[in-house]
Length: 460
Image 1: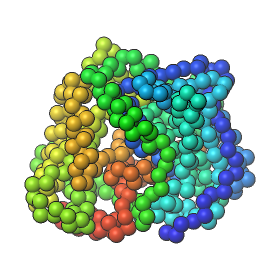
Image 2: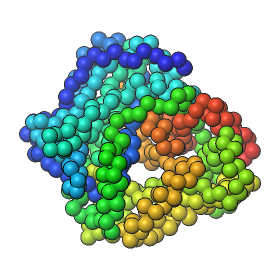
Image 3: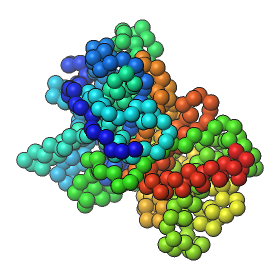
Image 4: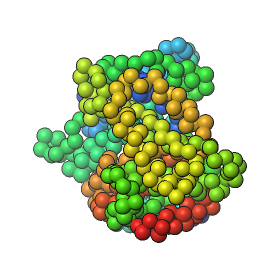
């Protein structure tokens, strides 16, 4: 797809919780938050069908969207606040100041982009998607050297007569995928209800912010991440230009195909595990074909990073609830020898390794293992093809409905920066899985071919 003209900005607003509803608040970073200080921003796009004109959109939809966002930020107030970076050695923290802080909300109109093409699974020039993402304002730096960094920005873009795209850019320091999904579903519910009295509609439970003092660092884990952040002198606060010739594509794997694939794995295995194993093997095969360097090193080990939600699984005096606002994910590294991963039983080997790693993490005292997480992540980072996971089918993002009908396409754009595989449930409700990848065009074509061959080979 050719690069099109960026959307025309119609208006920019500053949305905050209703004045006086949220006291000025500071939230310390936990050892789960600290790793994200040096990692890229979260960037997501949500596409909805919308048949009306720009004028109708501005009159009928945008005011409700902004009002519901304000009410949502009453509970998710850190997203309207800032990340405060103090001069070393004081640790960063999140801050919301009543009457001062707000979230930048942009309304735009697409000029020439094909919405019907954007909502398909086909490969898209990732620069096109970047035009629909809002950009975080640069940090404000005080004379004393304190950086004030916005946490989130939102942009809603109208494609007249075709659809609407809601773009979200945020720092991952504030919260993980569970938290951002919680925010989006709460905002959605209020918007769909036309901001009715919250006591009269069914809303998700509000987030809980008060657990941060309960989350104790088990071994100076945060200190190591802070040292790395300070030594780099900055984090990945800004969006980076995508590499040239990079495309993003989605591949749907049906329920029937998943069930057929499970027949090749003797032990009972979850849909997530077997689909991930199949995708990992296919992706590594594709990257190996394109990169002949060290191709004969049979003892090479490939690493996959998965994340386990620690909510309700940490052995504190009180459990961390599922509605906790923040990061609460433990990284797990799955390691498989090249010879085994790409061998005849590669998918079985990968599936067993992923299952074993998850079981090991869930059965262990996660707090006791936390000081060793960094060693595993460093091993993963230093490998030739470090692969990770973004999203999860259980998040249920395709249930999003702002009153325009259910979400018709979602893109996790930030997978371009880390070799990630985006996972979500199938949007047709068939209990299948959708995977998203960002690769150079030639590699994406090769992956699609290898995926098709794998589907045929396993009778999927």
